[in-house]
Amino acid sequence: MKKVTLITGVTGQDGAYLSKFLLNQGYEVHGLLRRSASADVVDARLKWLGINGKIKLHDGNLTDLSGLIRVMQEVRPAEVYNLAAQSFVKSSWQQPLLTGQVTGVGAANMLEAVRIACPEARFYQASSSEMFGLIQEPVQSETTPFYPRSPYAAAKLYAHWMTVNYRESFHMHASSGILFNHESPLRGIEFVTRKITDGVARIKLGLEKTLALGNLDAKRDWGHARDYVKAMWLMLQQDKPDDYVIATGRTASVREFCQLAFGHVGLKMEDHVVVDERFLRPAEVDVLLGNPAKAKQKLGWAPETSLEDLVGEMVEADLQRLRGQEHL
Ligand code: NAP
Ligand code: G4F
Image 1 (cartoon, rainbow, N blue to C red):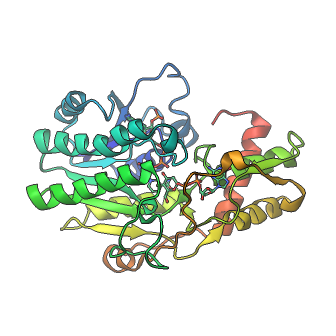
Image 2 (cartoon, protein in one colour; image 1 turned 90 degrees about the vertical axis):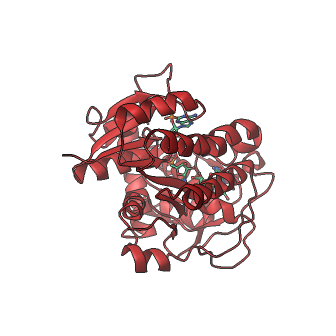
């Protein structure tokens, strides 16, 4: 019998990589799909990984509890990965209430749906290093106090504590992965890394001359999404549920990321990058740096992709896309 799993956010970056990983592990993979008028492109990431058609998709939305319960009753998953969210930090200041409803209350809806319809299922919540915000320790671990700096981070913090609360109140196998930034060729174009690699590819191909960015001094601990989805799965294979920081233990600035990306194609960022204050944020998370020691010790997990390799893979994918005019 195949193990059955349900992934929310299946059309996003992590949902696509996790689906591929679980299919390779022999799982029957189900995904929650919110209705879109652009149904022809919503599975672009699954197509990119060659797995569209291998996942059973179910209509649903994180804000609709009755629909979630129906999907749980139909699928009867052994493992549930809650990856769906309004995940773009900058938009969370423009849409704070929607972000709270989807990213925060949506996770509580998922916990309720599992508790009501399939309480034995193991549950993964996509928590975020963004919860550390105005950092209280130079290197952040599972014991570092949180200080959210955006409506997104505040919503994630609610979802995180609800996950802990359901674990402690109802003895659910509910784990929370506090993942630091992870990127890939499937990253949304609005996030800084993909914006940079797409911009570099456009400049290299003569389609653009400049790339406008915001705060070049912000620092992030960047890993590869392909490595990080494995950690999600490992958390649900443990006897006991718990919380884990997933990070590389290296931090780099947006400026350094730019230098690597432009350098990959033999260009200099100084010749092309302009700072545009439209891309600054009302409150910034200046630096994030994670300590993944617990994940290494208890899960046997370690990142496998260097920042240099990640940047190279992303720039190459964007060059390929632009030459072929593929949509993503
Ligand atoms: P992503 O690419 O933005 O994907 C988000 C997914 O959520 C998409 O599939 C989206 O569907 C879906 N979604 C949004 N609103 C929904 C709703 N109301 N109902 C149902 N589905 C909805 O995000 P990601 O980078 O893969 O991240 C996955 C999760 O990890 C997110 O929760 C994110 O906040 C969290 N996280 C990410 C990182 C990171 O660095 N990537 C780090 C820490 C935590 P559509 O395709 O229809 O838009
Ligand atoms: O790529 P970003 O938009 O990612 P951010 O805000 O760190 O959030 C991502 O990682 C979180 C984990 O820590 C996730 F929870 C969240 O869902 C998301 O995946 O911005 C990174 C940094 C920021 O400091 C931003 O100010 O890059 C800076 N930046 C500078 N110029 C820019 C730009 N960010 C964007 N998006 N666009 C710019 O032009």
